[in-house]
Length: 283
Image (cartoon, rainbow, N blue to C red; front, top):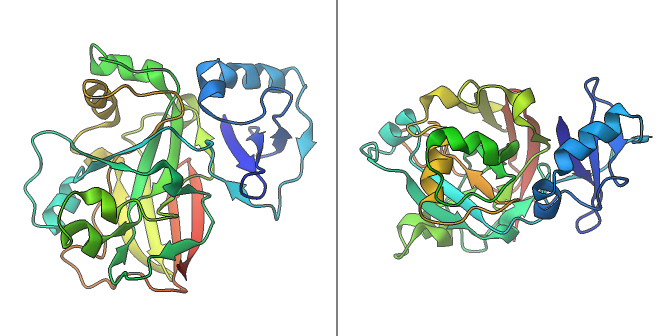
């Protein structure tokens, strides 16, 4: 199942896409796609309502698509989680996941304008597989338990300002939490439709040039390990988002790619999760 939110910022309405790509109004089931919806069995209720013909078809062409989950409680990120990305940054593969946070209000729609900060010289892109949590995860016993708490997956672009991140002292968060720095979506796709989360090709283009051409099989720490691991250090709540790292090809790496500038167009896609297209603006 593919869930999405449609409409202007702050006025999004929940919807779902059927197997043929037709959109249906989800408001008979919920006012929004958020932590309460996910924790309360909302996905199964939506599935049942669709099967029983209780969800009216709607037209979404030309409408804005919002982030598929209303503002999450937290956005947890794993850095240096692809072998090729660690290599291009001349960093040894970590022995344990590198964890940092992004401000929840960085989350915007998949096609919304991404704003370059006013003093930025090194705004960068990072295609990532995002996990959306559907049930509280606290001290999971094993990686096998992760499947029970994952509501689904989405595309994230973990936009980063590298000078803020690496040259201004302190922690990474200041280079990760600028406004609009986490386009998410277009859909929240349930695990049954995604299949193996370690079997997804992922690609990112800037102005039509392919920059990142990676695959989730190259994660150092896989999806289930990441969820289990994080649950040992924090409580993961329904609606929380986990960005799982990026493959090689970023501007901050062993290549000649330029950093992003106003007017650049970033396009992002992951198998079975849809596609983003956002234009860079200036804050």
